Length: 334
Image 1 (spheres, rainbow, N blue to C red):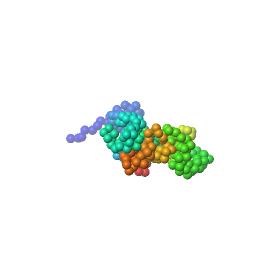
Image 2: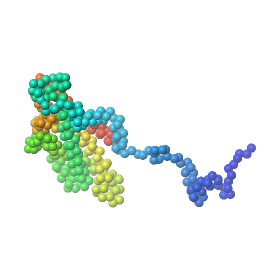
Image 3: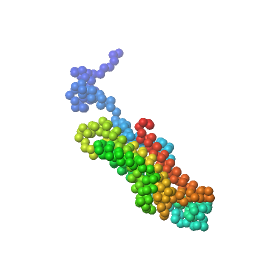
Image 4: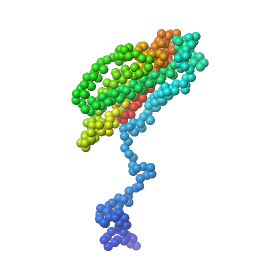
């Protein structure tokens, strides 16, 4: 029995192909037939998608890795808790950090006072909780100031080069030659104050050269890429290339260094307060409490243990966060 065949039209074309070609409005050529066959084989996109997976950016990849990094999760929880008690210390400490009772001086843990009392009879637990505000404020504000000033100067020097780059390099060499603690002793002795702002100002003045060098090198590397050269060839101005093309691709090393430096700035504030030139009473600070407790280590070690432990945990949390961010933003570590 002969097999059924598809009827052909006089021109030898399949009527189904003719229908597809006519539906596309073509003239019946071979190109129209190929388009019709491609259209019939194309699958519609799945609901909620735009025709396939989009390539993820560096930031989305970094966030994807950070969410699965236990170091980032642990340090992030600790920092979130520190920020919370810095904003609302009364939520977990109902007492007054400046309320003292000399009759209870150097006494150990008691009901309602789990950390005991310091040499003036003040509650160590309350002062430890309230001390987070000064340390976190100094660390965050100093880091923002250092990152903004250093990124601005270093980025401009790396982009334009010339005499400005040479001048900035020599200035940073001078600042790197100044010992940080010695500079703090001199600066804060000349500019005394009981608030956090003189300490923040000093850290910004001595901390920006490090960020400036990182930003300069990152900008020099980024401006040599092909997309920057293409933007320049298309007539893009300097401001557009800096803001749209170079800064988003050069900011990652600055973020990593600034995050790690935040912990060191908190430790620097405590060091200067311990030496008596940083924060001063009545400001509540871990450095002040460590300084006042250093003479009672044998008789009342709890006075030193809790503020020093809180300071160490805070610095460690920010350094761990910086390491996690570095691992996520560095393509060589993937």
